[in-house]
Length: 268
Ligand SMILES: C[S@@+](CC[C@H](N)C(=O)[O-])C[C@H]1O[C@@H](n2cnc3c(N)ncnc32)[C@H](O)[C@@H]1O
Image 1 (cartoon, rainbow, N blue to C red):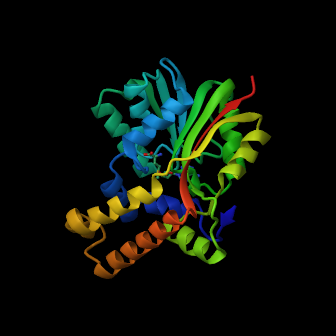
Image 2: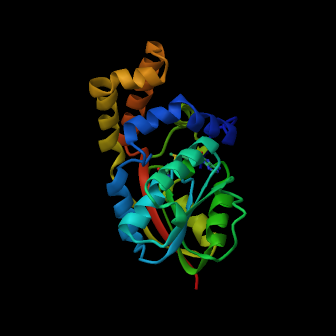
């Protein structure tokens, strides 16, 4: 694992309660992950998420993944866990506005200790968020605890790629993103195995390097005013953000960071 010190849940909550979180929403939409609907559809297909199932979205943010699953995969009900109150409140509001509130439950908790009952869910879901979680071993143990025997853990995440990050690159990238640490796909594989789960799918989606230019284009060519408004028209900060996104782009192009997709099944 590549990790940095002094970044934890409080930093992540500050991001998603403030301008940085709103900036990601502007660029990515209410599904705050690379590839939006296509990525969710791909993950659901690979996992075989089926009608009538019930699942838990760990790091659900605005609950857009949960609404996607109910609408597009006819999932019966979803429970979303997130540690940022502002995200949960807006997520709940959107579920109510869209007439889906009776099938959704939101829980404010650290995903490493959700307080939800064990072995009650068909699947655990996660999209591009577990990179924010400090203790990945606890997170995977919690995910495995929640699902029934034979249940699935399906997630995408910002992972370290096969080319690997140098310590210097990791420090800059993790510091900018406020990630305490990122895992390689094999490291997630080991944690899943240690929790009696068999990996059914593990792949680089190949989206990272293609999508960052899209976000840069939006900031520079279309949504410049909107982005500046969110950060208080701070031009120096805007230049810094663009510079760090270009740096991220260079890491993605070299295969040093990827959006990884994994599906694992708990031993029956
Ligand atoms: C990138 S957003 C998640 C996006 C969401 N999965 C989606 O696809 O729309 C990251 C979210 O993770 C949450 N988060 C990060 N670390 C957490 C933790 N340890 N426990 C609970 N929530 C956490 C943040 O509060 C934030 O809402």
